[in-house]
Structure formats: C-alpha cells, structure tokens
Image (cartoon, rainbow, N blue to C red):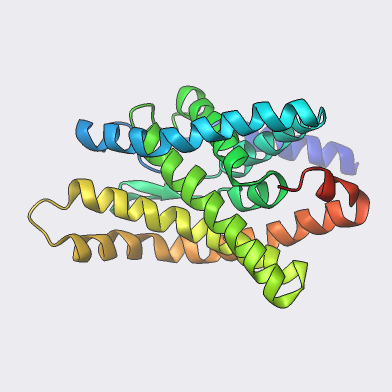
Length: 244
C-alpha cells in the first residue's frame, strides 16, 4: 500500500512538472547575454590560468595516484548535482543556489575543484540552460576559483587554529558559498553599473542575494560537515590519499 502511494505521488509530481506554464528562466549565476563582450572576455582571461593549472595538477597527480581521477569524477558529479538547484533572483538578473565547491575543495584541493566546476558549468549551460557559454569565464571565476579558494583556505586555517574538523568544514561550506556570490555580485555590478556608483550598485546586487544565499550558505556548511564526517567514519584513508 505504501509503495503504491509513493508511486502515485511520484507520477503526480512528474505530471505537474509537465503541465506547469512556461516562465522566464533565470540561469544559474550570470545568464547568457548579461555581460558585455569585453567583460565576458576579461573573465575568461582571469579564470583560464586557474583552469590550466588545475588540468596540469590533474595530469601530474593522476600519474602518481591512479585512484585520483575516479575520485575527481565522483566529486564533479556531486558539484553538478548540488549546483543544479537554482532559486531565481530577478532583481539580480541571476539566481541563488548551493555550489558544492566547498565540499570539493576540502577533498581534492582548489585547483582540481576549478576543473570539476568548469565541467559542471559547461554541462549545465548546454543541457539545462543554467548559466551560459559566453558567461562561462565569469561563472567559473566566481564558483570555481573564488568558491574553491575560499573554502579550501578557510578549512586549512580554521583546522589549524581550532583543531576541530567539523568547525573547519562548516565554515568552509559557508564561506565558499558566500564568496561565490560576492564575486558574482561584483561581476554584475562592474559590467552593468553604468553611471551609477560602482560601490552602491555592488551593494544593491549583493543585498538582492541575501534572503536566499545566507540560509543556503549555512545549509552548505552543514552539507560539508556531513560529507566530511561520512568519509571520516567510513573511509578515513581517502582523506590521506587525496590530501593536497
């Protein structure tokens, strides 16, 4: 009986998705066509060196550790799924969503996180209409670079200062998420502020994300704690094998 009810519920939920009216899509991070060409090119140039270094690290570390690439693939799948839950923020021309780069960074390091974030962003732009190809450099700079560096750096620093992994993981999840949206807000403000003061426009965009992104950042903190605890209790050797 319970199985039948679950089946009926799933069918109804799927059907409701089919009959819902079309609404304007707000792609994850910065949507296609939002950034002027010069800004899109600038952010491609800014994120490209990190992607190059990440691919180089994947090649070098992959030769020494045959288990690395499968692990990177699993982490990449996690980032893709976690960041596929957008909440539209029309006032910002973008959307809020968890990123997953904090979790990735503490497991495989920030440069490899840039690589998996780039793959996730390309797939989402091509098949889910989240983000865009012209804004790929900007989205990679915010989620892949800023998010990964903030998450990894805060995890290492807090772990050394407090000695408690769960505090470090929690803060890494929060700061990786909030760093992503701080950079996204700056990217939008820098490109679109026009005659308005950059600082004021930046704060306006940043505040538009606050109602959704503050709680989502806290959720990411708990997600990081849960993921780290799972590995620590089930396969603690992986933390040593894949440590940067």
